[in-house]
Image (cartoon, rainbow, N blue to C red; front, side, top):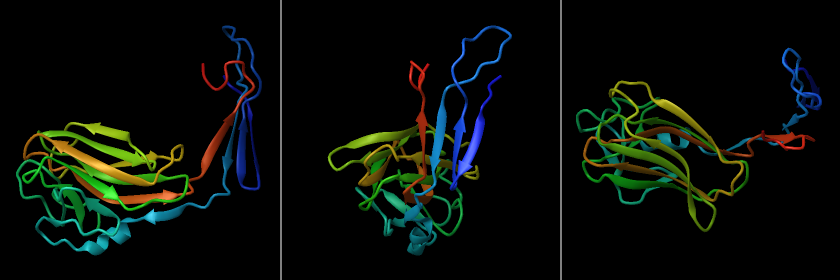
Length: 220
């Protein structure tokens, strides 16, 4: 059993779990740790689904026409219905009119890269659909001004049909310097139509800070 207190002042809640004790069978244990939440930051939209919805791709795969995202090799396409190949890709957008997908009949590897990003406390959320037996991976990478780093890797087929519900992913990048983001879709053949929808990027994500006086710090 752990005991502690929760206090709130000026909209910033603080949790304090008390001080260290030795663990003896049958006794309770309290933890010398506290966490504070900084509510002073105001999250701000940088890239939104509403901006991307202005593309109006229609019912056949069209070149990406997005104010926020650009395909490196042109294999990412925009679509409003299902993709052209059988047994791969979604049957419809997650919501709204359009989505972006890797047209793997044209090429099985491509990057989808954002415009420039400025600010701190970056967070991205998006929906993905990965139906197809030839899918290798979908990666999210961030750029700090000098190099790209993998931040998320989703490997292999993740959905069982074109009609399967899309999956939401939210990636907190507030610990990193981020000046651009990109997705990398990779497959081995035409059944690797990896799709993305509702991509939203914010800055000034509210953060938590941990403190402790324990001899082993915040681990162990």
